[in-house]
Image (cartoon, rainbow over all chains, first blue to last red; front, side, top):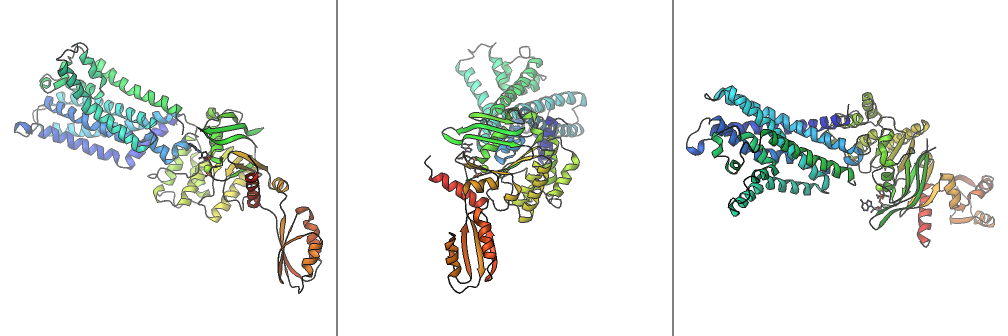
Length: 276
Length: 304
Ligand SMILES: Nc1ncnc2c1ncn2[C@@H]1O[C@H](COP(=O)(O)OP(=O)(O)OP(=O)(O)O)[C@@H](O)[C@H]1O
Ligand SMILES: [Mg+2]
């Protein structure tokens, strides 16, 4: 068995052992169902909302919790083992440092992937069974894209968390940095962009501006998930500046992949040079 | 061929000198004890050999390779770190299985090692519930995984009960017979003399003495002490001994204690055996602990 696989399986075993996967799955089901049913409560009615509205609110929710969960899962991967003392031991074993890192990454992505797939598939099935005017043919592609991009978004933040875990020298610092990253991408970035847009009265070239959205993985995720729905343009807010022609699905998916590969590569580079 | 060879190795942590021009060689089937005060540089030496640290100066060779290329030999290496900790949420068996897979050791070895270190009853309990000594035993089992040709044990007997300590030394003896080289460091010196081939005494990162127990005794020229019990009514025995230039350190009517250099030991013993007023003789040769104290004290007195 390759070293990467062994480490990945150990991560998966950990996630199962501390009931991490099951609790995240349950959280996902509850949130998705809640949003689907109460999503229109603001306008005075309850009941299942149209699929487009549902997907937009699901995407907004995912942007908040998936990065948080991913960061939480991975922030102590390396520094945790370093503080425990097992890292010292592992480094004397026949396995490369990059293998350890990639193994951890894969195991954590698989764990989060299982929870995401299970949670949202279950929610999708429940919605199909309960809501009358939503058909399988429209729900399945939307949910498939949502689940796939949610896992990718999780992978981005797992990669970032691993990077953090490689350069800090204390677990508590890793937690601090992770929280900062979460605030940055989930809250601050869009606000800053909005501020920029208002301050320059739209003066930042309309051609250039949409590309700024690619600097935030959560915006890429949102763009991917709402682009298919005309009705959602109203709720898209800031994102409406990015027209689908400018940012094709291909560009969005490759930027998301780049957002996984880059932090992971830097993490490997740092870890190879780290003194333990 | 030497398995490990350090020549003129120095290690600095910014300004602190952890190791200072250390020379060290280990051949196959040799057990070497690294001794020294806290902070003397024992763990640092091990980490240099393992490739976890880079030497600031000098050359380190393990199996003829630089330890930074440890993928050449890491499968033949066993390491027990000081203060070893394991994944608290896994059972002892799961921990050992994980390490066995990484080291590509046989699956059956896990059970065998758990039995060897006496953890078979606790194997299916989480490490969280282990006592200190049980964790240490698990660490030892981990170090013995695979077929190591070089073992580095950092304070292996810490936390072990007397029987487990004895078992450990027996294991080391049999490994040595198979040609395994072992470096161990320990602060518990009594009892290890019979199991080691050579001791290296470090002090502030410098080597102050090295050699087998015999060699160290010869270098140190420490006297053996003899305690004699009997009943004599005068100071006659004390006088007789003084006449033979023997140092008497304590004396009363039932017991007398003397110190004698090893080359005159037999001569004095013969004299004592010929006397009829003596019931019992106890002799004590300088052991590792006394030698350690001697060498570290001496180096403290020398101007550096
Ligand atoms: N990471 C580090 N940074 C700075 N100094 C260090 C570091 N690790 C060790 N040292 C210093 O290097 C010296 C040697 O340490 P080392 O751990 O080798 O001692 P030791 O002989 O194993 O001691 P002990 O018997 O207490 O285990 C000590 O003075 C220690 O303070
Ligand atoms: Mg030490």
